[in-house]
Length: 381
Ligand code: SF4
Image (cartoon, rainbow, N blue to C red; front, side, top):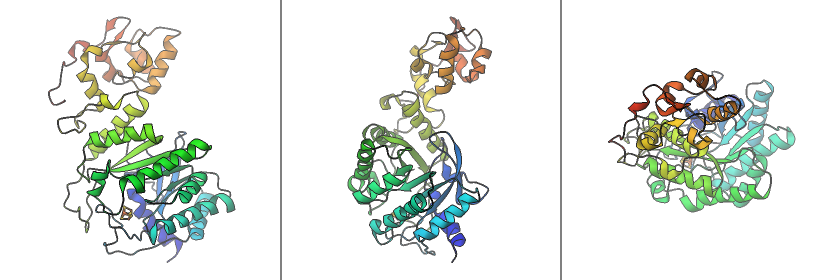
C-alpha cells in the first residue's frame, strides 16, 4: 500500500482527536482538500491547514469508546517515520498543509510507538529543517525521556485524559491509569516547559463528553484544576458518539449542544475572569442546554445589573451579555477619549447590542427592556 492510500485510512482514523478549534469541534470541520486535512486556528491567531494523522491504527488496548480498539475487525496500517515525514514535506511544498498533528494508537507498547512519532518529528525538524507547527500526542505511559524529546521538538503536545477522574476513566477503559499514565505525564510537561523555553503552543487535553456518564461539573472542575496545576493551554471537548462493535454501541450519543456549552463555560474560565465556583449548573450538575453559561450566571445575579458602560471596569464589562474581551478592551480605550452616548456607538466597537441592551446604562440611562431582567430562573440551582 502506498503512502497516499495509507494517509486516507490513518487520516480518517485521526478524526477523533481534536487539535485546534475555537469553540467548535475540529473533528467535524474538515477541509475540502481531503478528510485528513483540517483547518485550525493556531494560538497566535493564524488560520492554517493541518495534516492530522495517526502513526498507526493498530492498537493493543481495548478502550470501550474507541474506533481503533484491538477487538474491532478492520484493516490495520502503520507509517514508517521516513515515509510519513516525506509525505508531509511533499504536501507542505505543494502548499496543501502548513502543520502536522500526529497522534497514534498503541502498537507494541507506548515506547515503541512514541519512538516512531519522535523519529518522524526529528526527521522533519533536523533533516528537512521544518520550522512550522507540530502537535505531538503524548501516549499513555510514555517514558520521561520520550516526553522530554516531544517537548523539545513540538510546538504543542497533548495528553488525552478522556474522562475527568480515575473513577470515570475506569468506566470507559481498563487500559489506562488516570494518575500514573496520564496526569503524571502532564505534570512532567509542565516541569519541562517551566525550565526552558520549549513548547510555544503549550499543552492541551481532550475529554470524550458523556461516555463515562460524568457531569459537566466534573469535567469543568478537572479542567479548572489543570489550568492551575499543569499550565494547561486549553481543553477540547468531544461529544461522545457510539460506534458499532464497541461495548458502548448502545450508549446514548451526547448532544452537540452539550459540547458547545462546555466550550462556552471554558471560555468564561480562560478569558472572562470567571471562577469555577461561579459557573451555574442545573439540578443534575450539568450546564443548562437552553441558555449560554454567561446568561445563566447573569440571570442568577440580577443585583449586579444594569452596568454603566462609561465607568465599569473590565471585569464588570465582561459580565454583560454581548460584551467579550475584545469589545471590553475597545470600550475602555474609546471612552478614555469620548464617553458613549448611544447603542450604535457601542455596536461600532463590537458589542452585540441586542444582547447587551437590557443589562446596561449609558450615561445613567437605561436601555431597552432593562427593567425586564428576570429575578430568578427556577431550573437553575
Ligand atoms: S489506547 Fe487509544 S487508540 Fe488504543 S483503544 Fe485506547 S483510545 Fe483507542
